[in-house]
Image (cartoon, rainbow, N blue to C red; front, side, top):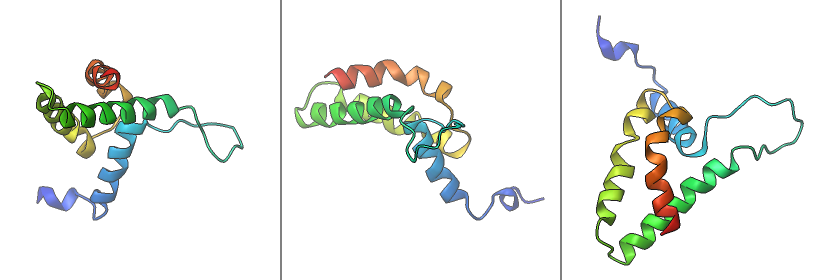
Length: 102
């Protein structure tokens, strides 16, 4: 059996959802009737602040900024394809915190 036959046609869409879930957090079930759920906002805020800090570090040509960029580009790529969950982001959290504080 061909291994590629097991990949659904909508796999790019699924990978984009996993990309979003990796950086924003996996949605959780809620009984709230509110149109917007802000429980994952700190998770998204840490991602945005880290990317902003990375941009500042690159613009200021700080030593090691390229290492952080390489880490943020390469580490999570497998999770975009396989499975996105908050626990897979934990090894990256210290680096995200360093970038957010820079």
